Length: 549
Image (cartoon, rainbow, N blue to C red; front, side):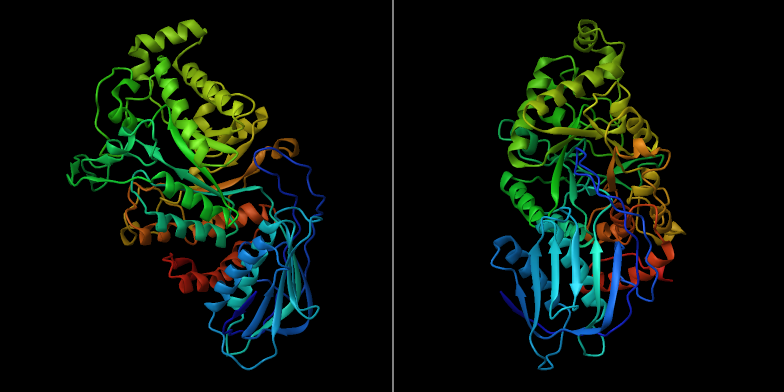
């Protein structure tokens, strides 16, 4: 395929990074790559985020041209990646200097690990991007995209000759978006996915059900969207205030099944797996508002207008609750090909269960110690049902409190303690501690100059210090699948605000997930972020700029 575009570039130097241990596939481990820890010192620096593993400099520069031909060998999947590369490069604004044609070749080498790639810039007569799979090629294209953007000055198109050999430390590199507190359109979700792809993230955790809105159409239970997707208003000001007022403006929205399929396909084209979250047994107000029999009291409640934790949760004593959850999940797994389903498990008050004869009978019949073990019973039962259908579960770290099966994956959010405990038990873990990964926290002080947020203070410098392995020995480290950025939207109503909270802190989490904790360098990261910020500007992304002050 051929792409014609204009390029501006200037030669500059490129330096190193290190080789890191092999990534594990999620959620099961695979044989580790034999990667020796090496740091290559030279006068070159690859100004890429996340940092690349190894750079071998060549001599001189390689000239790109406006008459660029991308060779994919006729492979349909590589054709699609080549088209994306052409679109990326067209935005760089190359001037046509009537240079000789330049080729970029994309290829797959099964001898590489699936997400690894080798980017050879001009040591031969062309640029080659070779990946262990099409996903690896895609990540190599993201690196090339950043380098071309860096060297696009002075109306010339020259890249330093070099060979980059790169691949991720962790097999799970995720970003979560809450669309329940505030709803985001399909196009806005796609742009969120584009941002994940730029940062070489490979998981999109889509938080779809909550107290304040049910966002996914379920054919068997239409009231979930006709009733549960809409609330009568939204809290005004901050929920921590002494007096709450509401705007009384109806608010809501949901995704049709066609919407879901469109997003899943869009993400897959960018090698991102979409992991849906269907929250249980807590944060269930919207579902109970739709079908009151799902609650312990059988009473109709409203879809919540405020933020927080609410006492009405799914009744764990009634068989009808399990029928409902399984029916919902049956339709969910038809929409999402992901190997994993997130089933929540966080912030579930037990007060209704303590009063409920159905729940107390369940505790007695199953020989459970208390309501915490009742939650464990519910989670294990749903997990078993999903495993029969070839899916695995992941849940927030509260699932540890009622006893957890050895096959459940734990997402550690209340700091890293839950993840450390789970890894020591032999459960797989995704590290997403609020201390480092909650991007709804303020990122700059004084906060009076920041847009409204939930509270907390998490500057990019702190985000960058995340060590997913902290507190674990070498044997336990193998249970850490990766890292995730979480973006809750109680106080995030619009896409511009969302992007501002996300960037550049997502880049810091991406570097931890790709590069690993051992060889990170914040000052180097901050320098390289200037180049990535140029792409933010070109794409029209809103981002916080204070780290460049």
